[in-house]
Length: 180
Image (cartoon, rainbow, N blue to C red; front, side, top):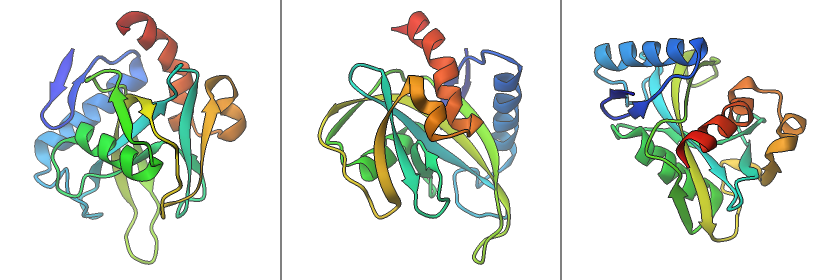
């Protein structure tokens, strides 16, 4: 188990995981504004895979700006605690009133480029993902989304072809069998 300050502990499962973790570790060690929001330096973001109570579905948002189905999450905006940010964003974007962590450990890391737009240059998001379970509340769409939907894990590929989201379906069984 390895640890990065402000990120938490993680156990890479394969070569992809190892590469992403090593890149994140290097970035956090050398970028003083890693948890900021400056596109010139790239930055850490926190994401939440919020599972249904029975662990059979995941809550996805149809992101307003990106026009894609994604997990909940967002920028750290100077908060050097990616797990806290992931949970905060999950509450803000879902309308749920109680969300519980399934683990304090990092579930996944995904480093991806955000394309340039009229306000920002192209930059990287060092996205740190955590697992949560919805406990209570009804979902309601925030201003950041077109829609929210509980998507059965068995049908996740019907909603998105994004490898960064499908990683949930691929990694979750081993994680649940080993930790819960």
